[in-house]
Structure formats: C-alpha cells, structure tokens
Length: 67
Figure 1 (cartoon, rainbow, N blue to C red):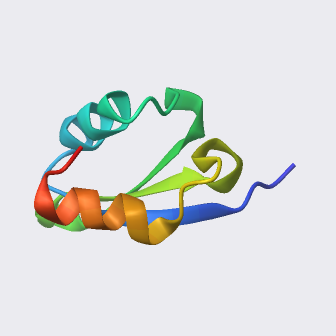
Figure 2: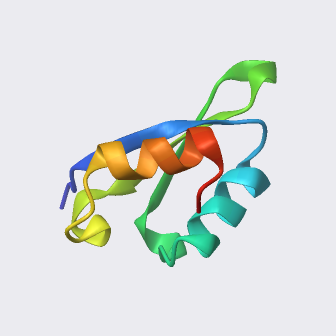
Figure 3: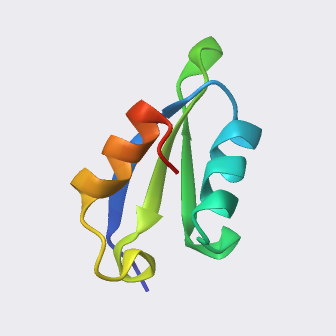
C-alpha cells in the first residue's frame, strides 16, 4: 500500500531529521528519507500524520526554528 508523503525539507543528516520529527510528535514510521549524496537527506512525512497542519506551517517552523 502506497502512502502520499509531504516533503518537509532538507536536513544535514538523517539524525537531524529524526530529531525534528520527534520535536513535532511525528512517529518514525511516518517518515521517509531520500539521500542527497554528501549534502544530507530530504525528509518527507506521511500526510495522514500531519493532521490539520499544513505544509506551510511545518516548513515555516523548519526555516525559523519555531518548533
């Protein structure tokens, strides 16, 4: 079964992305990582795990460190 994911953004490492997800109460099974070579990873989160939050809310927090 395929799930739709919402791209959240780029992180320096998978551990950094996992830390962000933990701070935002997102379960590890809802995460999807895509390697960016030596530049880190791109994190996507299963849409159903985002609830009522919009992508803009999450990416805004990622850019500004609000979360």
